[in-house]
Image (cartoon, rainbow, N blue to C red; front, side, top):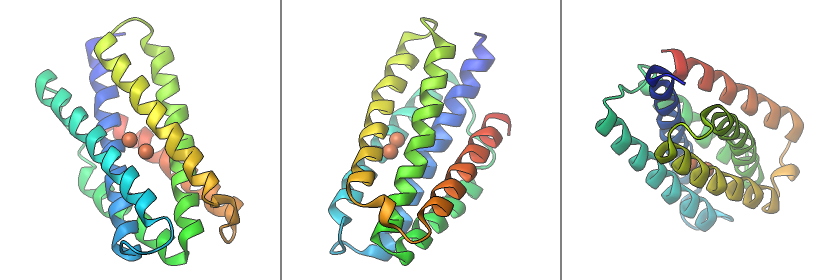
Length: 171
Ligand SMILES: [Fe+2]
Ligand SMILES: [Fe+2]
């Protein structure tokens, strides 16, 4: 694995964590702090903020530029969070379940590619992946699958997330 490839990994991961903070910000803007699951969403949002801050610090240390698509992820993430929360609390949970399912797959793929190459990065990805799995499980436990049009919603968001990952690695 080349340095360029590792830099691209950090770039896409920071973009994802940034997008996650925007999704939760959108959800919380609609839900306020008294809605069902608001405390859960707030807790996850705080973990995403920590993930993002740690990737920001790693980018600064290693001289990795952020994705040029950051302004797009800001708007798209917020809109996705707000739209799903407007549908209802279960749809907000379906959004989290879909995103975290995809992020789990993405981080696991990266860990396979990294192997023993970069323990600092690998340890961070492993730690965050475990948090994302816990977010996914919490979202399912909170009724993600009872959302209106759940299969459609779940698959559309997964597809969007995959596309965002592919674009952020390149641009
Ligand atoms: Fe995260
Ligand atoms: Fe997460």
